[in-house]
Length: 82
Image (tube, rainbow, N blue to C red):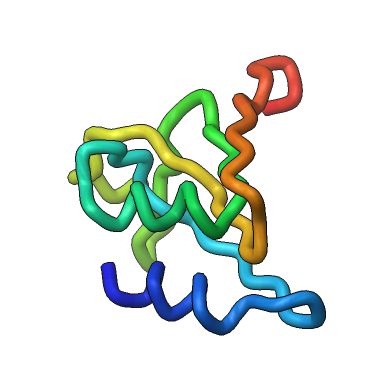
């Protein structure tokens, strides 16, 4: 995902970037993410809704929230908070 690299370059002390991404650690961009962003792992996949408010299927992986700039800290969002 080229925008993961773009977010890593653009984020600085005054600019914060937040992204909702698939939790996909076997990709190249995930390694880049861990060097430049903090990661909040969500306990389950975020389901997106279509225009009729029906969940869209197709993403079998979990979801995460990335926050740039960061230090590579990984946090698991506790289920009770969900």
